[in-house]
Length: 465
Ligand code: UDP
Ligand code: UDP
Picture: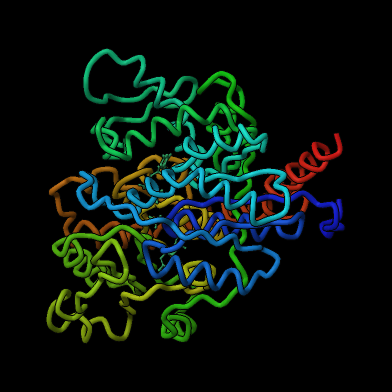
């Protein structure tokens, strides 16, 4: 089927992301992929929580004029005395509270909508309203199919359990998620995350279909269990659309990285980055610094000391101690700046990725076939580490610290595992094949590519029926 379509009668898809780069990134990538197949608008909600998000949105809308922005100014909500303090979580709540205004704004400010693509943290607030307007609703699940299976079953698990607290969660027909791998907040039933998670999980069955940023061969087992209704009977069609292709636009970020990477030999550099919203304790950052230094490896390390980028004011030389920079000068770059992770992972010098296994990082490592040393820190990250290990994309030292732990993983432990990953040639080969499969899935004729084409085709048929 030809990619270029006559856009005149093309369906119009409106995407509604929530907040956080982990959400905006896959939504923008989906918007860009769809923009060559149909008309696409994306809701842009301001203010954003982080500067990275506002930069990303403005860069994306200028680089992709075919994606129409629908700007929405969020009303002021005073949540200063809310028991939860995570600024991204509070923003999800605010966007949810504005669902009716946002939908109203969408229907008034643009051409008729053929379908909405909604983000999971705001699903339960938007779906019933959108359905009452007769608009088909699709979910873009930004994490792995493993996490989707957990989310799909979790409300049933809660309904069936007879004792307080959480135990291991047996996802029917798939796998057991140990209590210790469950996102930390879910252990507290009063936590806002738990309330959203359960209400959004219950809403899954009402979507017309669910997109997941994964690909068939990477998560065969979870995709099959979901589609066969083993996890939740009556589950809607699941369309694997990953890896979604990175945007083609200049990314604001530090400029020193690429000239340095260009000088390093192939597969010699460990890239260390824990995503856009995971800040480590000072003690853990110091241990990590020691570990990277004593591993003897070359490394590119993006350090984050605060959850929101604008509040990250700690000086690195103060944090990492006297002499650190001099000692690693000829074999490392350590920065607090945003780097273009896609460019880094595709660089031939990068041979390993020490990552929190955030869902985007996992799929990006898979796309570029870069070995991972997974160090999940919270949220969905331990669940995401399962396909990483299963597919032999990477390794995961399961006894390393996890959110809420006081435990510091020592520099010695880190050095040992970093060396082990970088020396593991078998892992390099299997990671490389995962990359080949990922790129095949996303290329014309591949399963993910065809999944998106079929979605647009279906909307066209709906419009003509
Ligand atoms: N990212 C990046 N540069 C950075 C930090 C993060 O490009 O310095 C991107 C990364 O490529 C990914 C997203 O930000 O697309 C982070 O999402 P992920 O799901 O991995 O983790 P989260 O930040 O949501 O914990
Ligand atoms: N999530 C979900 N339902 C919700 C809110 C979040 O399934 O109502 C998922 C989210 O997509 C991610 C996971 O829960 O896979 C953990 O979210 P986290 O707090 O780590 O933030 P995120 O990675 O989404 O930025």
